[in-house]
Image (cartoon, rainbow, N blue to C red; front, side):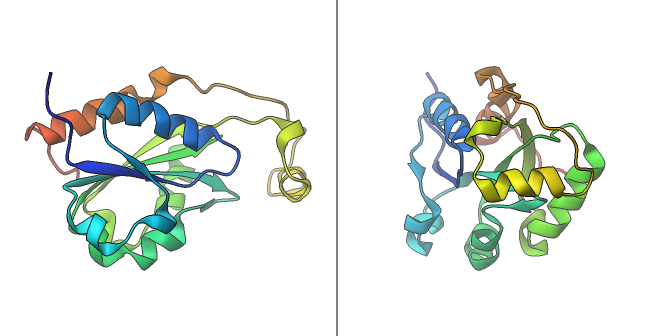
Length: 171
């Protein structure tokens, strides 16, 4: 069995979907998960790669401020970003969200992966339910749970390929 990659998973989660993906990725890669509030420059400087997970709410990545605050350390590592959202297949929205949430200084070392999000209407906070119902393109919302372990396969394969020294940097 190949050695585990030299890295950590840093993630934020609000309703648990991003945490579920992070857990599955942790088991596959055999690397630790760390809350971004507990990660410092010393941890980041010892990692060859970081797997960063975040949900998106109204176009904003929950981890966007952390990315901005830590970009000096982040641009020294290979970043694999998994973004959990309900519009995971809309490439136009993906590109807009990337541009608006990821600092330019780390874009070159970041490979994003979009994973399907879960929506359970009854679990939404009152504020989130109101935003979903009144936001741009408001529509009747329904429960949706396309979250499956198989969704992480492309990200896990990319990390293993990179850690084996076979990967390339996109763009």
